[in-house]
Every structure is written in structure tokens, then in C-alpha cells.
Length: 130
Image (cartoon, rainbow, N blue to C red):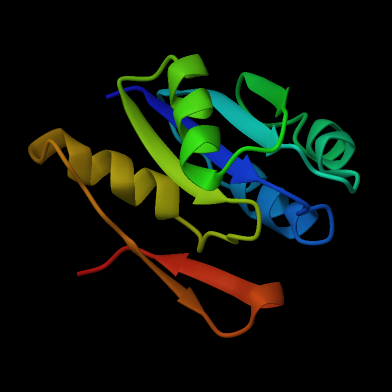
């Protein structure tokens, strides 16, 4: 399936460069767009997203008034164009192959979940649950 990656962010300027660098290292056929929703940040989250996210497929940064995480996710999903959506937070640093592994699992399963393993907030790593 084609994929959209949606990141819901509020005041994640400090963590977002690491998250976007990890995503930029991913190579996935069928990754059609990346939607970053800045949910009313008071820091430079949107500017960081635009600067560091340029290499990502179909990057769009959407700025909203502060709401809540669920609403920010819904905004991102509504704006996405993929057949499946990978949801992340602005401080999630995915492990190599994370997006490709989810996409491969979606070939055989209509819903795939993964777990987030955080050693520290600054160095979070996502891994697909077995």
C-alpha cells in the first residue's frame, strides 16, 4: 500500500531534527507524503519542520491553533493521501527500516501496530513489535 507519515507536534523544535533525520534515512517505495501538524507551538516547530523535512516525500507542514494531540492527528490524517498512515510524534526517532517494516506488514494485515521504545526523550527509538 501507499503510505503517508503523519507527525503531530507541539513545541517539538528541540527534538524534531533528530526525528526528521531518522525519517530522511528511510527509503520506501510507495511513501507518498509526509504531513507535519504543528498544533499551536510557541517555539519554532513549524520552521524546523520546513527546514529539516525538505527531503521527505511530499512534505506538508500544517499550522493549527492549539487543540489537542487527537485533533492534530485527525488533521494530519485528513490531509494525507496514502492508503495507510504511519502516526508519529515529533520526538519519535525511528529505527532503520521502521517505515518499510510497517509497509511490508500491511501487505498481509489490515492493521499494524508498533511499540515505541524510549531510553530517553532525546534518543527515542521506535521498533516494530513482534
